[in-house]
Length: 317
Ligand SMILES: Cc1ncc(COP(=O)(O)O)c(C=O)c1O
Image (cartoon, rainbow, N blue to C red; front, side, top):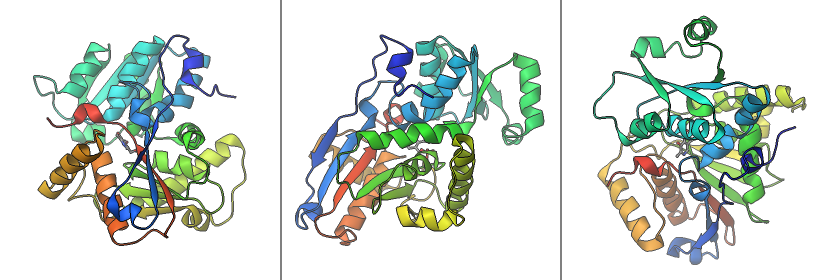
């Protein structure tokens, strides 16, 4: 039903196939473990990373149904707001960004880019922002702004899973583990639907007390399967456990909390492997992955692909 690539929807838009780079940390080499980094961040300078895949099917639907406007929600540093603003510019759609909190001037690089790309920014106090999923609130927004295609916060909703499942097509054959940072679980849940027997997704939660994400992913999967008319096993949680592990101990103190040890790790990683990472998402994933490698958590000879999910515009200098 959907095009496989947004490039087909917009001839001339430059979306590159993500390169696969192999790196050789000692803790992997010594156990004949091969470690690859899938550079989703290189797909597009502003609409790359997991955001490309998360927006894929929504954009196809919005364009097919002749919507003129995308409306979405995010914090002031939201990579999703940034990517949605870029998508609107590329595909000729107006964008409305509802931002949590008060405006802070000058705008940070994320919001400055979004505004420059044409996104209309509206600020919501925290209590109002919490109503972002209420039908009545969305209705009031439609009365205020006219019709729009709604992208929930983080772009995470059942439609996003069909897109993130397609990351699987970029993996090499014979992969055993796919690792990625987890915010809302949309990317991880989509990947679960694509795995073949025995393969496992390792999700590193970037927020504290993130156990609730398991239930959230279960709900997303149920909605996704209903949307595509696919039956799913009665115990969806067992089905998930067979293909995914959510790691809860590498949040570094909470969302966007960046302890000095993590900063040091990110600097060393970049120096050694010449791959830029940032500490909120990709940094925490590699930090956790290194710890697991050092603890011998992977069987000898495993093949691991770590997803670089982007977010580099928020990288501290
Ligand atoms: C750079 C980056 N990596 C990973 C994630 C996590 O994706 P998800 O929310 O689908 O778990 C996000 C944001 O949500 C992100 O911005």
